[in-house]
Image (cartoon, rainbow over all chains, first blue to last red; front, side):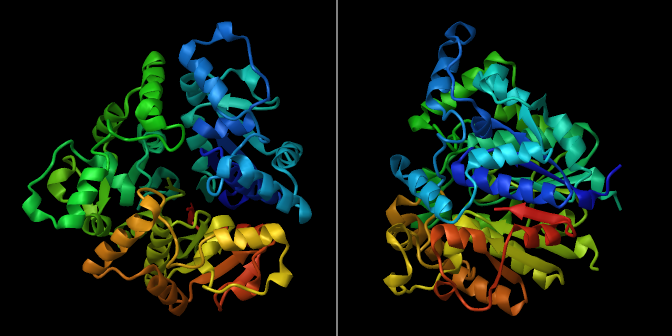
Length: 161
Length: 161
Length: 161
């Protein structure tokens, strides 16, 4: 079993652009230092992992379709937790990131996958919000809270973001 | 003294329905696995523990009465951190939880108490917000930050929610 | 190297008055108990550390000037994460804190510095948001995510606030 110093877990709950960036900056940084990193995406955090598609409506009931439409589809559609200003804030933030050669969130997600960050989608949240596996990006694992706890108990760094 | 792997603490700060659910899902999951779990409720998180009563006004000053009125009273009155839409969001979320046989927040709180999750109300926050013990559910402990830190230092899993 | 029980780290991300207070209450409490405490201020959390000054515009581009103007300048200008009511909420909260002899956020920051809490400003966030060292209070360190991770891996208490 790995040393707790060599492991980190994060629960990505919020699904805002800025909080998602913070979690991937920490995750890729930790993975680059050789740590085993696991990110659990739950509730609004699942939106970070969405593909920009609409799936066949017949698989969803009315409320699930409403949630599907109203929640942001993937890293390029997320809002900011503050100063969102109907989407102007994220545009400005992205421009300022680009000016300073900071990777986009989409690039950070790809980098995390290359660095073998384990990305887990919370199946209970998916059920409640009506999200299907075919709406989420490839390369994810699917699990529940017990799986999170098993990893978190062996990690010194455990964050809820 | 218990192994840090066998303990978990959470600070419940936000008091939104979704974040409160996340914290109780983690707390009851960890307790079911045999861990000692402590939840510290502070600031808006105290609203999760409120009973749906109004107490005698004579014990509160003007601002305390305003806070009492404006803050949600208990698990069935909480809003969502996102997509709240003046209360429609929580209604939809609760319906979707029911459809998937997910317990309500009220049931999760009862389950946590049955599983001996220690629930602590932050006395400093209660003072500042004018909340009295008779407004909160039974079975709580009352303590401050030193008590939190004493438990957190012995736990691997420490979350701020 | 210090015992992980004797260390605590916090990422201060949100920069709301209430969350900033929670982080400084924990930080000063932990430091008073003899722990080594490090606070990393990133994204909106940097606003907690701002001085109430406006710096020479010539050092900033248009968007940086906009962010400079629109983000709160320091502990006395922060809003609440809930019940902000265009600034009335923070006024009420401050009054209620004063009534109960709770220190102001400004005083808590000074106390943290006296107790040798290490306060680190995230340089990447400063770049992205266009914040300069001369806009932040004295006594800070400047570092990035690798520095955070190096400290967090040795701490039992790691919070994201």
